[in-house]
Image 1 (cartoon, rainbow, N blue to C red):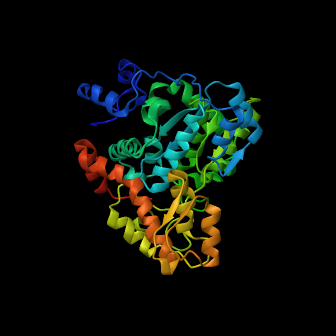
Image 2 (cartoon, rainbow, N blue to C red):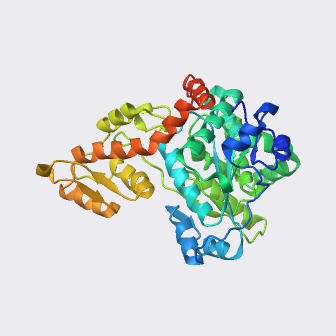
Image 3 (cartoon, rainbow, N blue to C red):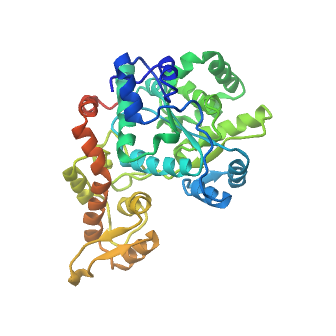
Length: 399
């Protein structure tokens, strides 16, 4: 894929749902075929999910570690034929397994429940936050790579829309900027500064002016995209709450539901979350089998300890949701082979000593390698995807 398509071209191409910077005419057919999204225009139509309201609610609720508010989510699913979910991401480097596999799981659950999912490819936001050294062309290349990863890992794109912030804001600036200014006008600087966590920053950092304005724009995105559900990580909670507070300010009854997913911890001791600037802290989506094996061999996994154990986290939030079981292969003298169907059973055996780190790590590596193999194959066998990955691997990651 040469580049993300323009909004006008997306309209021309029978409603393909990617909008962004310039695309050559020759890429039209490739985009429609490879993304598999021709014929979609705007929000996807209602579908018969075959699920009851209770089942749809439980499926959506399983995505979030926190939901604000549960009753609002249920009411939304009951009253609105196609709820709109949104997540925004900065294209800022290679994709780790939390953003790749966990996001794929969450999106597939929500679309299975009848929702429409909007990905806000926040290229301008990455520029404002100095990602990729503030080079917009590099940022947009990384954005293309991330879409390729989700295609390869198994995200159902039939009810998914990828929207480039730079293109959409330019196209609809008359809607966007008055909204941004109104949110800014109604909030004190101190309230906005409390949201700097969403960028991986803190209030005490020496922030650029763009980074101070960033939370206001992210808050505006929610309304600009007409999102009913904010499906982001718990680290984005403060700005999502800002959006709900804004609804109170303008007397809007329907507030966005916040459905925040768990943040997967880094592989090293004491790492609350993965870091793209520290390759050993995370499994990346196109890591080789040898890379995965080595990283897990070095991963923090103290015998019998659950708190702060990244290996158990990977089993709980990646392996079991993906495949439904965690299989351990070992000799009879060490307890023999065993299939775990619930995380509770894994944890119980680990705490008791029946399951040792020496059992966990190779089994976890085998499962993760199986999940990642289709992604590796895609970036090996698809010429354009391979070229894209080779290009972004040369980029320097900046904080």
